[in-house]
Image (cartoon, rainbow, N blue to C red; front, side):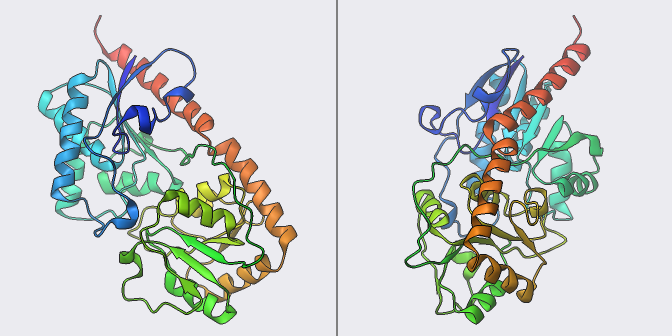
Length: 347
């Protein structure tokens, strides 16, 4: 079966790659890519948490082309493209299977936004989410059967480890922006007087008092973030719990585990779907400065524990969060939809 892929991070397939296509087993399916009209913006430089009008126009153009080109089904990445494809699919009156991959809405807003989501997404065949809790959350929010939602872990390609832990000037690092609990982290590192680097965006740190122990380099790129993660003694993902928040922190968690680094994350927003406490990392209770303080002290002073957790995390991530592992899961979804589509299509 033929599938058209629409992803916002694929602008030039020769440079940006072909996503998970090489890792889908067998030769039952054929694929083509509809590229985004411009490169995806650096997440550090985002000034707003919502999609702008201009961005929506870009998504709608990409979705229109995907609906026009496909000879079978469409795979979208990110909720905006799923909605955009759903709109054009209805306008074109084409009955096509749609897989909404990486369907992470972030916050399930009520009112008009919810109604628009229900209308635009009503014909999406299968939603792939990256935390277990999202299956129930989106099913209730959209009013769709829970069977249309499936948890598949967020994946990352293998990340070369080219930097060693900085033992001369050790530090803690916290990377990421979405729903981060930096106030609790700042309280802890100030008490412990430990050097800390926070690689985040200005919006996530706006209005916060930054302790003298904390550096906040703005505008750095992906390579710099990976270097910091590898050189840090501890990687911390402090998350802020919120009933309206669907998921957060998975990208940073998976990449850190792929690099075999010791990690501490807050037990909320789906982090517990990725980290096995005491085996592949440490989970701390939400907004508990004391819990986070104890975890940091324990890892900071125990190199053997850091190495054990890091190595176990890397092995676990290779087995569950790799392109190969997730490609197999996507292949099963496509096979199932292809079988269903062929049964529904008249000869």
